[in-house]
Length: 566
Image (tube, rainbow, N blue to C red; front, side):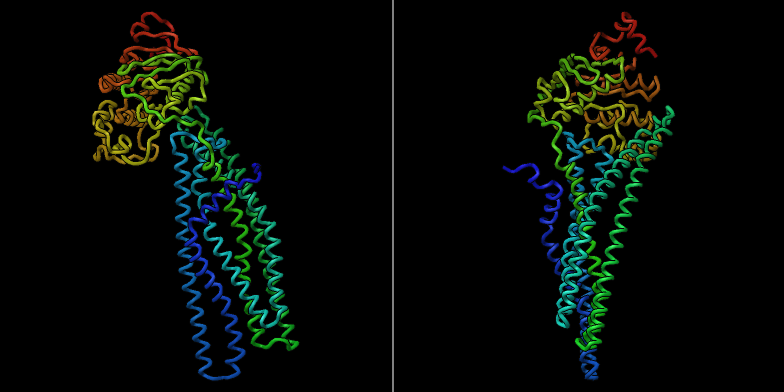
């Protein structure tokens, strides 16, 4: 029975997949690059033959043939390199795109994956830099083979002149690669650690950008920047370490290649001095000794790039091979829209229990903000059913039995900090372009004044994260998007905290009117929204402690008055 240690590593499987589905391009690239290296190697060989024969004959015909041969060699070098690299780089770019899409698809799946605590910023780095470096294996293998072709051709040509020259090249190449193979392992581990630290720094700065406004609000920006500086400095130190290792590797490779070239040249000189090889063969040997440094350099760098590609593939495997946090069921909720929360315990929730009938407008007044956030996480399926005790039923069926796609088609949970995307007002409200209630949603959310402010109306350009909108405009834009979705069940979390009291009153009435006959839950402490609801549930210390209309609660519950009074 195979043990876990005998199973192929996910990173190696990713590299094999990349190689397998680009085999045609790699064969074509290998042939063309091998032809390039063979033609490059033929150049000093041709020069040696010209010296050996043409200069002895001293005929114009021989000189013309020699010049023509050199022209053919130069043309072959130019065309084979151009078309070979074109084939390989196209395959490389296409493969990197495939992995980027695959990693992004994993991040966008309705069910989150267990990715060992990786944040969105880290996944972004994996989907870009690591995908690119993994796809580099498509170029590495053909270049490695073509460099080997050059070394073999040079060794054979030198062996024809004198076997000792050929053996010197073969033994020297094996020795150089053995030394560099050991060094490349250090590069792989150092690069993998660097990529992880750079990804953490990227995730940290992404978090800072998202929370920049609240950080400025309570004066925490300096502490946050200090935290990022420490993470970034750690990444910088690791990058310097990797640069040192790479520098040592490159320096060692260059020095060893130069030593081998010098040894070939000196050996050829000694053999020519002793009369064992001719002047033409000496010219060929010296030319090959100088030429061979380039393919040897390329050949010796390939193990480094293989290790970097493998390190990146291992990081991609963290995302691609991660299991889902939960396995959703196959069912779909029944149409209508009743919602039941039965004894849910999660975070600060201590057995929350309530029912919202289909078509009812219910407000939940949380006395502790954390409890509201925990309830939103459960309803939005951000906390999967196995992560909490109790049951949530939608349309009479438990969430655990429903597919996440079906839940989110049937019930939309709009958080108070919903994202605003670069584009236009229209594409933010109706991303799919299929909403039948877009104009009603704009009016209900009181976004009409924002539309009227701009000549382009709904086609007004919105910057990334809504940077050119005020806080109230962003919140109303998010609310308009939620209303335009027109789902059976709509859950809103603090939808009016950034708007003035008059606008809030109008929005509350509009929501009640637009959503009449559709199930609506608003988690809020806004008196306007609480008053517009059919009934209010009080959420205190993780449980529902009271239930009545807003006005009855105001009249008979002093704690409620203090909690919602403004």
